[in-house]
Length: 636
Image (cartoon, rainbow, N blue to C red):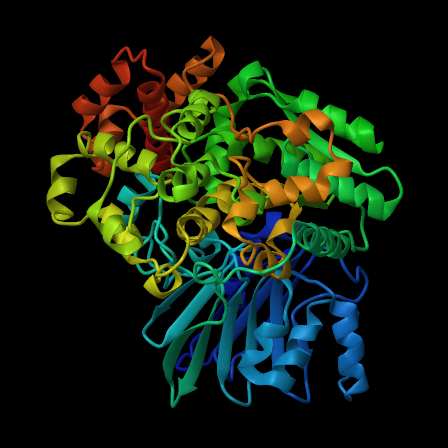
């Protein structure tokens, strides 16, 4: 795991060493073990790298160059199964100068050209410069596990793992985008969108190919992968036993790859099926006690540590429980989490995970395997189940919906909307409005009533919900099962923008911790999305196929339990947390600051926060709006 930064301006052929060094310094938390640079004034090229040493501790420094082929790479992340790939390439005459996994990308590029990305497995973001072709290639992994941002202007390109590093270059603007402000206030951002004008996130499964044509840059964005759910009725035709074995084999392989490192590898253990499955497989593969880290909250309604402890005891793991008082989720920790995430968040789970990454780092651990992605591919979220119950003829009995709402009542207003809502753009694109976005439509209705009139005037006519629907690829939705449509729409928006951002890389790397989500190995995903929807969710049981595959390594109580969303307690309880939240409000949400930012109407917002809301859903929604407002004004 590392941080990368750089810029290329063919018309400005001079060294700007201090600038690239400043960009890299801003990424020190991503790579505290060293830094390296490739500066070529004759090309106007500057590439920087900060290293977190995990593989090839002694000779894996970057940038890595192939002098004969005139290629240079700076990479962030991991390429798995690289030893096999390396061995095959060596038999074909390719020479290696390091033992690093990153070097295989250079050789694969030489062999396959731009199709080399099809042969890369893992979570990664990297920059590769081809001097002979005068071409810079920026690549991001299939799901957006690793971040990569860029800005292009006046025939110059600037890129970095985090936006804050881009801002260290004097030519990169820092103007805030009002449309992005609105999207972040309602949680759901568009693919490629950031809070700042003309600063883009490279989309997951995409590459940017930038070529120098006589001093002018030609930019091509290419998609090399997508979650291709099969048309309805064309899912894999196999028996339950065959599918269960496939799931086991693919997941064991994925976990095995992610256990490989030249430093110790631990697991995150939340108490849910996903992380418990990861720990169970890791313990079986490693055949020695695995270090497992668990978060415990002081609010019993949100605490799963007892289930996690059962799992740790069952497999003989060395469990480390970090008890987090809810009052620590605001104040300075909230500010830090926003700074690292570079976006707002609706729940302070990201703050809790940042505190966990700090704790794990202090224990000398650099790598953890995590359970993110399982819900996305096996149909685990309550919203997916609701769409199945509403739109699949096999689930017409309303008992399924009643039970679902009852079991998720504590999350009413965030996980599930308390009432059905729809939007014509989604109805036209998908045939229904997916349940996952309905709470955010209701948040948008609330936010609209609080916006400053000048902000409303400037964005008149803009519909963020319609924009979200329009960003989805119709060809990947048409003819698909309702569950597949729901899962796809979430994967293209919330997975990268939420789960893998302030729930993953950004808060983990705040303290130099590489997280490896084994469920998001693309071989696992391609297998999972080809499983029939009625096998992913069977008889109302979410992730049925995963439960059966992991049955022998899970505690019986967990195997039989419905999914429980892993979230932090809300802002309005207990008293200490309320006080810390109010201190942040006083600092960032006072009338002067609100007027300066120009997003929210000061008096309307103050009245909104003072309302006595006894309804669970309305109270949850106010908590969401408050968290987003705090984050937005901290960023501003």
